[in-house]
Image (cartoon, rainbow, N blue to C red; front, side):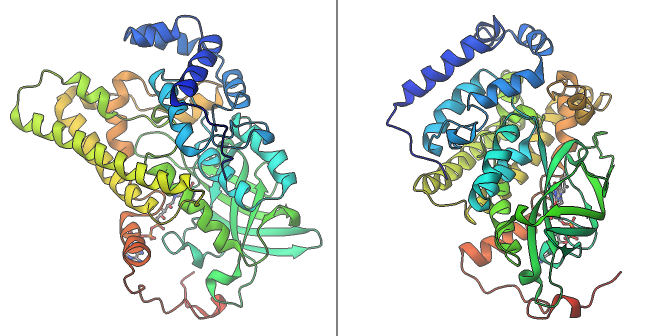
Length: 425
Ligand SMILES: Cc1cc2nc3c(=O)[nH]c(=O)nc-3n(C[C@H](O)[C@H](O)[C@H](O)COP(=O)(O)OP(=O)(O)OC[C@H]3O[C@@H](n4cnc5c(N)ncnc54)[C@H](O)[C@@H]3O)c2cc1C
């Protein structure tokens, strides 16, 4: 996917990034970060025009450094080289686009399967946060077994007509485009009857209803399709190839959720390890010190595993099942980390007012959890980590079957035509 860049040293790439930031971030931002002056960064951040920043940042290629520059947003860097750019962006806590699903999954899927027309039309506004993307896979009757889904698309000339329901669709309420997996042939076994479309979410046949989560936020939604229409030539892959295309999306999702993606952690919130270590530097309780040291070691192990998977991708290989190792590790680690943050903070860690990140984004501001709310929010939000993007049980199945080579899980419905598989409802 990434075009190999002309040889540039790590220091050249770090310098290039620092120079761009010095020219474009509000005056005083970088100095405040280097001086540890959190208050000044906070006030500069709240004065920023987030939408305008995302366009500048995206068009300069920094939102998606591994994407080919020819599509209007990218630096054509290899994943290895992009690491040096991201190091600087992370250090300076640069606001990133909210379009996490688009950047982490939509863009890579369009690059792998889309036509040139789609790449030129879709990638730049995606990277610039002007068009948000969502993933329309899960349904009330199909989550872990997503290949069993029921949403139907029926061909009508140059278009397909879509009917059915999706659920848990993150940021659907903000989205222009959806990655839609639906059934185009019910008379063949479930995996072979699926097709994959890029669907316009802003059309009359698409109804989005937000769901309220434990954090108080409405990150995800129910989505109803009622005779919605999608162009035939916006099908990714061929008719019946939907499962193969979905695998590209899911592999990239696991990379994003494993902490290896290029998206800044501050888009999600929670208590990052370095902040926790800083906050409790002087702690004397031996058990607390042991838990902090354990968290540090675990985070380094995840980083090394991510590096190993990244090195494989550097050779040009697509994201593979090894993403499931760190998706599993990262999800369970983050839950332990957020629990540790809560335990160390004591009662003040749970005194908070709730957050509504999607409302903040709608108002044109960068999503950011207030410092006071971080600990409670991080703990509550982390409960989803072992479910979203495939549960930990499913990650273990994938690792058993596709990495360790163990026998496949028995599935009586795998060979039957989908229409003959017994189901409720
Ligand atoms: C915060 C959040 C955001 C999400 N965002 C999106 C999104 O944007 N788009 C989208 O399409 N989906 C999204 N999802 C849905 C997510 O992918 C599903 O919730 C997940 O795949 C599990 O499916 P399910 O909820 O239907 O649970 P089920 O599949 O019903 O599973 C129930 C339980 O059974 C276990 N189980 C099921 N099958 C097996 C098996 N074969 N072996 C062992 N155990 C098994 C599971 O591990 C789980 O514990 C999101 C979920 C969350 C929590």
